[in-house]
Length: 266
Image (tube, rainbow, N blue to C red; front, top):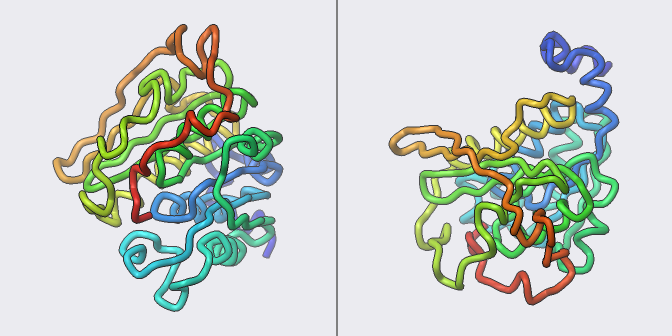
């Protein structure tokens, strides 16, 4: 099918149009995490016409994933998430090129993984990976769309690159093990990952087409129980260990990323 026919409704948007659609087709996006947040991000970016997606996840599909990880069915239980997600993305995206990497992002390799990407989307379930991605993207000056979700709430922010502000401007480092609730202990509503992941996908598209109205320097907090949506501004910290004037983390030291996962049942 011709791309113009697939994307006809999107091409009408003044903020995208033919020029923006061409930028999407030329983009190379790395998505880390193919679970609850990854599902809406991957499906939305593939359907939007992003030309190249690399999907990273070392996990396999489990029955407890199915309430929110909508790229998967019961028939996929036991299969590699990245491989199944890549199959679904190809079905949705027409000419999209998709690479599945069934591995965990690790210090030492993270900067090489993000280097050359147009954009990185953090859909990971563990705090070590989230801070690792933040630090790698800041060092390599690659925009990052961060997302997280648990129970009834989610959050999204954009790290514009080396200039920050970044995740460590809000949270200097991962909290002590056991300090945060997990999806296993606190639970999670499937719709929450759908909402947060959809916001991530929208931020990614805006960044890729050159729209400046993104969540840089703002944390979007969504609570579907109340319900409420609010954006909280935060500044770049000159003493930030990642994007500050004298950075001390560079995504290579394993000891900087050894804490419990935020969501141990992705």
